Image (cartoon, rainbow, N blue to C red; front, side, top):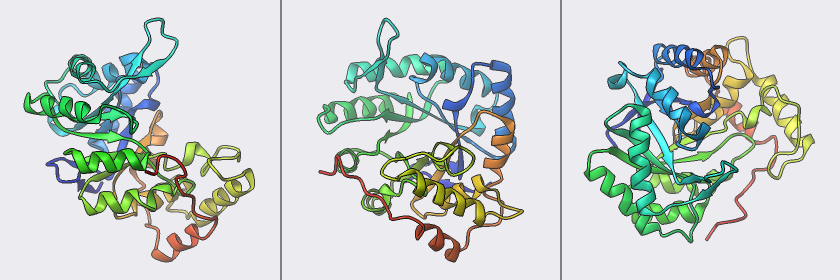
Length: 299
């Protein structure tokens, strides 16, 4: 496994991160998969208080007991479940973030969170108040660093200019190259780490039937998936090809892959040691379909 420094932080994380959202409600199986991930050299585990109404954090925290000094735990805050359980609402207020941090610490069974992330955000949020909450938690030693999870260029720009974020989590894949225009160069310039999710585009680049995705129609999605498959080799699966397209971008710190089975774990973990995409192969992949751009939340 390869490791990279996350932005300007003192966190060194695996080039493949474990996206815990995909874990199922099976404590024993989750523990087995998480322990195996550590054996593979994966040290970055990303969860959120939103997932399974906190149960995901509990599974992750319990599975990592006794391994705390070997792993980097990231979680997220900002989505508040309604009392009737019908859904959630956005809440980026200081008091809410401070109270949620306490609850996440308990569920994760840890004294500190390595990376605490705002789980979304809009340009109309009380951004300075939100930042203040993270800074308070950092001073209290309850979190080591903070970041945001967002695909909105205007929100990302605001946090870059006003805060001490060390990372941004965003969707990025061969079918979603929108970050390449503004966000990746901006974050790289400011030495802010990028945690890329969605590298296989919900499975459309690997094994799911083609359908429209973002601004691409079914034909374009099928074309992209075919070329990913055709470019794969005996030593590099289609999923590994898609992951390498993401991890090979110099702005990306870690490709955070959703994992729910041991087979998916092995394939993702071994993507780094598989035959790497050449510069020519990357160029061929990018010529398949027209690059897409963010149309909303630009300014």
